[in-house]
Image (cartoon, rainbow, N blue to C red; front, side, top):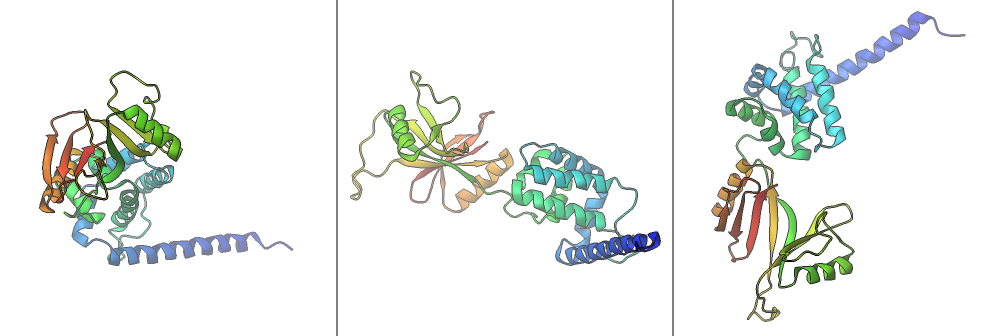
Length: 273
């Protein structure tokens, strides 16, 4: 015998009630662990800019699909005429929007870095600072440089690139496959397109005498950041840690960069990509 229809309805409503109560508990825990009320109220005042930020992030195809789906769901939640949590409940009642926004944006920052917020923020610097506080980036390091590849000096870029391509099973990045006259820079990638090695032409190069130290090894490491702001932040941190600037090419529009010498004198590059 089938259950009366009203028992089915009661069971569905009971299930929804349990989900709702679980959401209340999760939001309460997030409220205790998360940012303070000032940061939440700042975000609520900035809600129009935050909605635009979420929309821009959701449309950023460089972000993983799962992250963008979360952002689209967040947009849908923000435009709902009702709140998940009634406003009369203490602590979480007025701030459920802020908590949900913070949780989603924190997941974005974990994957894409805080530079994604900088690129897409449509409002004032003060508003961006409030959002950074909410997601846990309130004046600390906002972005660490990412290792791009190791660059090796050589008097024969094609010959050395071919050696490592065959030795390691690598491939040329698109555009570097065909030899050209006067080439002075080639890049090899793995099978997924991630950079591994680069080869830089130099006019002359004495072979290393390692393990003795008359002639040292010749290579450098390249790092990338996502914005000029992060590049300048990295410069300040590098100099504070003991690096020196060997080359300042930040006036270039396409690829601003610094070449630093580490405390032992080894060169490394940091640029915007």
